[in-house]
Image 1 (cartoon, rainbow, N blue to C red):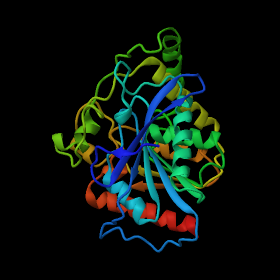
Image 2: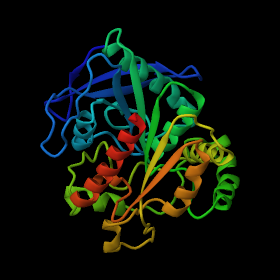
Image 3: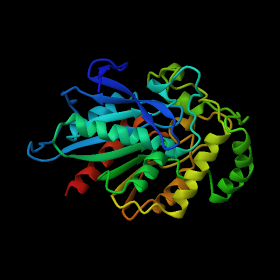
Image 4: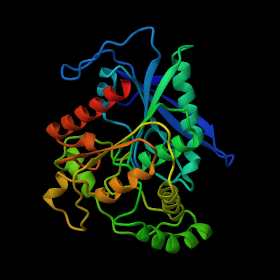
Length: 329
């Protein structure tokens, strides 16, 4: 592993690597780690026994996204966890010339790089055993849930931040979309689907548009990467697996906004709701994930609850900390 200075500056390092998927294709991914020992005044670190196992968390970003939330890393450090994030292939730090941003033809193609990242996290601590928490946002939440179900025992708990577990309103819409998309995906997998472009969520978070967060538009474009047929087919197939039940054995926390606002015209309410997903449908589908699922609905939260306004995300962090404490016994 060759760690180097990261784009987030002091306290962060990144390590690009290649992983060969089950289809034999080599893909570039990038593991990011938080190295600063300092905790913020509001996020006090608990006492952690040096004799106990290491605790680490691996964060998976959403579609057309990358890891940039420094405060999230500080929170996990304050809870006694080593923090890592993975910029998956065709995203963020892992974008390569001549490739389609955000593209994947099968969500299982992420398995090799996630598995490699998990191995790197284990090696970074020498011989000490590690208890790993897997965390995913949006599409990364769907990917994380599917990976955990295929790799039972690899993680000790799963934290999902507005995971894209189902299409809007019902499974009927997903099935209808599958009927239309699948024939195109088979014949022209990288065909761009001409769907309405909405930059509402970007508008709610970007400091360039009245939001709070500084985003790199090359890594996270305002209108997202083009939607390609095989990518949408892969999402629909993954959601179908969730609907059939994943039977994940470890405890799962799902954090969601209390409300959605998914219209085609900008509304100021989109600064206080999930402007991407149907949170009621996601909350119901979350029960298909496993045997122990906790759902937290957060008033005023955005699609990424940890990018919401300061008071709202403080509420989200408090709920996450309470759940982690409960799992620790």
